[in-house]
Length: 309
Image (cartoon, rainbow, N blue to C red; front, side):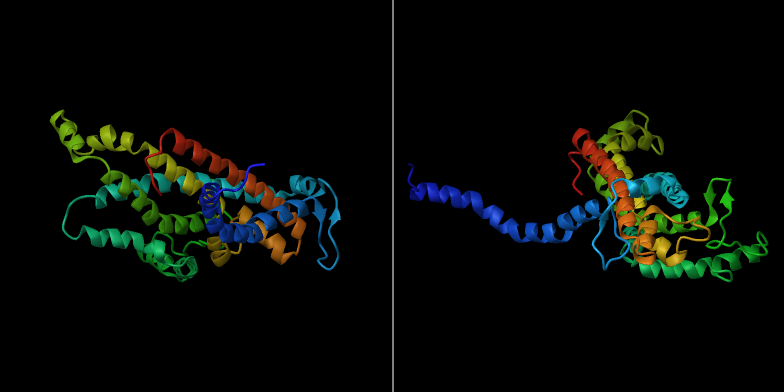
């Protein structure tokens, strides 16, 4: 039998020390993340309407109920519309802003700070402020009335009518707040990528006749593809999990026209006390976000290894 020599003890100590430093964080993660996640997974196969009684196993009953739930499919549709409506804007518009504020001009730092300011504003404050702007007698409607475009104003947050028959007005109004909040954040990511491009690349392109806007098509966009892909995946995950804007501004109404899947989960869990059913919705949401997260990892491995976020 091998004896524990001082040399072996030092080797074991060196191996164990990093894990001992990680142990408090791991214990905290197990208690606050992994164990509740396992409990939620188990509850999605049970009926737990009465919290005073133990959950009753019903198998795939909640999933069958979810399949027949018209409101769930409506929230899934709204979440998909949120993805399609918000992500392309948050991929393209911040890049344009980053190119503009990347110019070496006097006072440009003030513009960077101005564009980034919405990021540091609490979503609660931003939601309340935009709710005032969207009000019947709010600034936006007063402006439209003054121009004579919409004498009666627009019911920004109270109309289930769809724009071009696709996106409800209430949902589009909430999307605008998400875009406004996210522009500065993604602009900073793009700005980091732009500043990593050597200036002599643009100089060489200018000699070849690629200058002005054309240099961005020839150089900037091809070199920024990893950042574009990263922003697309991050913004897609954020759009899938949107909750605060909906909760503060519309409460999912009217007629569920602005209700997203996360808000529906919250409504079922804390409004209707359908704990098991909410866990089932959460499981579906987890699978969607897991797919987007795997996509992000694949993108990072294939082309975004040089990106540090």
